[in-house]
Length: 300
Image (cartoon, rainbow, N blue to C red; front, side, top):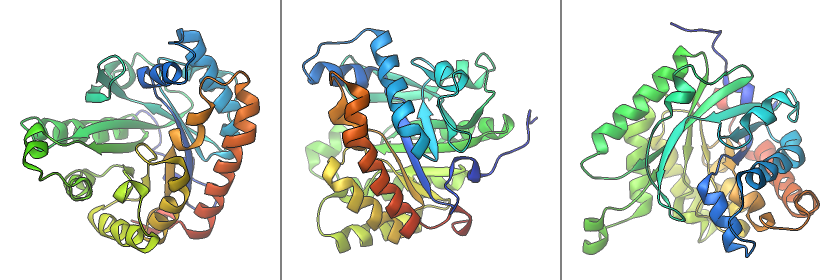
């Protein structure tokens, strides 16, 4: 039974119907990024402060802002950091992750979806799915389905984010093709009906622009929902043309974190570096979205 009136994607979209959203839901991976930047592994308050700085500097430009409940969600929501036009997206994934390593598996965070977290002010929930061709494949489909249904029951939008990974057998046999897996995951998971599908960039954003556009068209035909691309795994300098190629192929924009702010982690003056480096990147990406993205309402 729904607890509130169901929102539309306008809640996290720009006026023209495209998406220019900032991701700031990294947890232990962000702590590892500080370590890699040479400033050591930070305490929790340092992670929170970084997220607050990103929210203040980039949030006013974004159509949506994604954060996790562990580091800063309540402050971002309650301190009026984001304008009303910037929809708040809350991560609903519980991550299984070794220290310093990639996320290996996810489950639904019952603290978020089970009623323990106050969701007032939240427009959407996001779930990361680690997609593999292994014995847990059916479980992940069921997990994604539960997430979509639970978000709807809460009257919230659902943002589904599959990230594909090879099995050891595929790597050993040399049969792994990431782009094929991205398309296969989309065919399997997008029919579950998420409000928005968040896909990896084909070709990891590398190669000729026309090749990227054709690869994005192939992906778009497999997605039965409005879709955006994420920036994980894409070099910063390749992300803007990759977004443009995807938008020309039918994508409605992006939800990106590292491509915007990864080289600001560990800086002595984070707000100043965000203004110098990250804001111009976001502004350029917004221009691409406004010029080329398919409005979400046309993607239904």
